[in-house]
Amino acid sequence: MSQQPLRYIVVEGPIGVGKTSLAKRLSEQFDASLLLEDADENPFLQRFYQNPREAALPTQLHFLMQRTRQIQALRQQDIFTRVCVADFLMEKDYLFAGLTLDTSEFDLYQQVYSYMTIDAPKPDLVVYLQAPVHVLLQRINHRGRSFERLMDSAYLQRVNEAYAKFFYDYDTSPLLIVNASEIDFIGNERDYQDLLNQIAAIRGGRQYFNPLPFAV
Image (cartoon, rainbow, N blue to C red; front, side, top):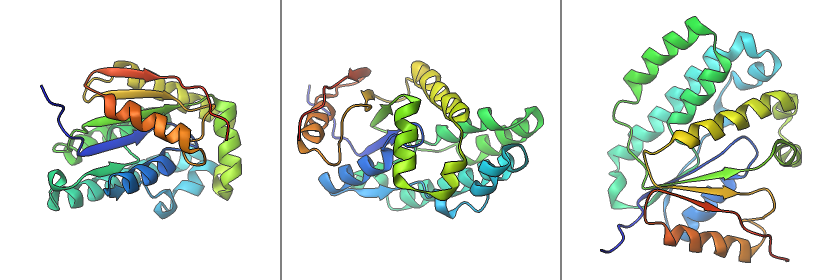
């Protein structure tokens, strides 16, 4: 039986793991539409890092509405006529809401989420990038976003653990789990080609990729 073509690929993982950079490169590789989470457009995000308790709900609702608009625009273009690569999974909103909202806020969020994501398309492949907290912090500091420097390691650890738990149970789409802590998919061509080979070999279910770094 021939393998179905990948039309909708999602790259996911915790803050700083490199999902946006990889999504951009894959979109060039496949001549694909690119769907990116734009954190800089969220007016509440810096406030959230300064005072998480006060700004959590508007931050999450803004991200939810932003991502829903992006997905709906994609559907109007017919997602199945061209490959699309995204750096977010709709379900990530629910993941972060569970971390940041209190009980009453989360109840409200659930109602809005259920209504807005009812017809979200299912990816043909999800690439989940993993890395330990100290690696994530190094990459976050390297990219130099001022508001992200307010993020503490304890919060990042909770995010990392929430992603691990979410993908432990995830079975909606084929899943490639990648140890991204020691490799460079952007600056090292051999690392990148090795990942492409793994993507090309996906047939369904979940697979693990734990590569050794190639020397430059």
